[in-house]
Length: 149
Image (cartoon, helix red, strand yellow):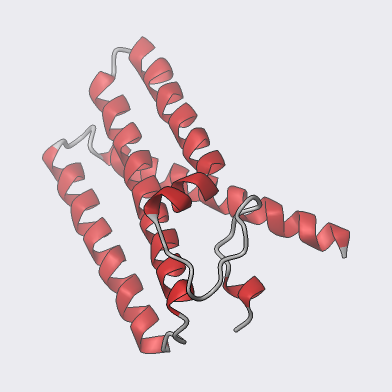
């Protein structure tokens, strides 16, 4: 695995190499565009749903976006820790980490959705919206690189 292929997807992040010290602050800095866009989308949710008097739905959608952002940042931090450790992660280790993180995310999301039903379904909508944001934000730098080649 090369350093370039192992670097988390961010157009502004400096190259990460083994021996560097991983920090959650660096992950936040590298993912600031995604975090800013998520915050704007959360604010927009309150603006739109609030005008309709659906404050609880707006909170659930914003909570889903926040939960998705937290999952994204934790994933990036885990990737940074793996890269800086210098070890080659095994397939089983990567699968176990991913499945654990997604299981916790699913349990929290479904639990909140059931607790605040029917507005709680907005949490799942917020997670889906954030996934769309994350795909676009990680896909754009890749498309720019393909265009250069």
